[in-house]
Amino acid sequence: MSAAHKVPFTSLLKSVPQAICLVDGDSVVRFANSQGAAALGFGDPGEVIGQVLSPETRSAHTWLVAHAAVGPDWAFLAASDRGALHAAQRRVIEAGDEARRQVSHDLHDGAQQDLVTVVINLQLALQKWEAAPEEARALVSSAMDHAKLSVQGLRQLVDGIHPPILTARGLGAAVEAFAGRLPLPVRLRELPSGRFDSGLEVALYFLVAEALTNSVKHASASLATVRFEQTPEQLVVEVGDDGVGGAELSGEAHGLTGLADRIGALDGKFTVTSEVGTGTLVRASVPLPKQDQPTLM
Image 1 (cartoon, rainbow, N blue to C red):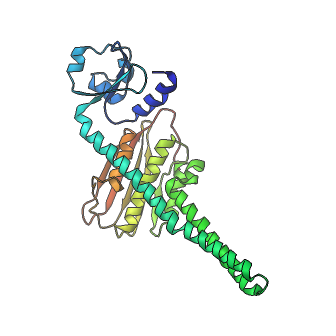
Image 2: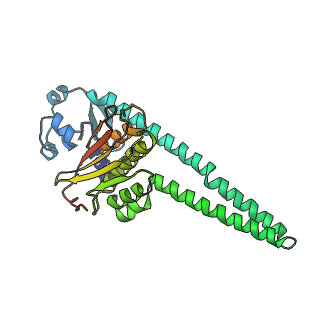
Image 3: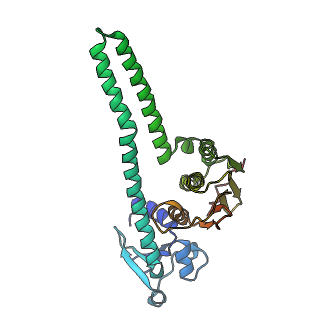
């Protein structure tokens, strides 16, 4: 595999929660994620690199085998994880399809309708400009109002896809801004003030956003809480409310199950505690690279 392909490919495989090992045509291990190293009896992926994966070692596990797109490398994926992997892949595809449908729907029913009204009002204003100037000015004023609504709708749509504040100012600022827009009081504790890996920031931001949105829509809660906790090894976030409880993982491609897939892709842990009548607590912990050492507010 060429260097141009290997770097992004192996970087992606590091975040996959299943056991993966890449070997060359001589059965020499060129890459293994932490789960793959553990499956082969090694404590650290670095200990596996350069080892020869013997036929006896291969036969000790049941592997799902697939050729890489280029070069002589092979990918070995533990077959015991095959069902979970396929289910997660299906949910990712379904979630992407649903997100695209939702964006199309929001554009059609929101910004597009406002922009159509802007065009119609401006056309009518041009027709009346000389004969009925007061009516023309009123039409221009209406067009301006609808243009502002269209801009507002587009901003909200962009925030739902990837809020600019997350890119510009980081996880803590984005969570604070999102919580401030909700009709539910949210108590924020120890928000991170520094920056993390972009994939981690996106995953945890949407975890908080989804959990708080569920508190507003489904929990009948009077108060929600968001708390971060950082150690040198991991970043933990908890989102809780005092609502009706009873939330559960559905196995579908959205909601809490989608959040679990996001956190799993970062080699993290995800739990939901939600007994009926006692509120809901969503908790995620994600391992941190050594360079991700920001402070907390």
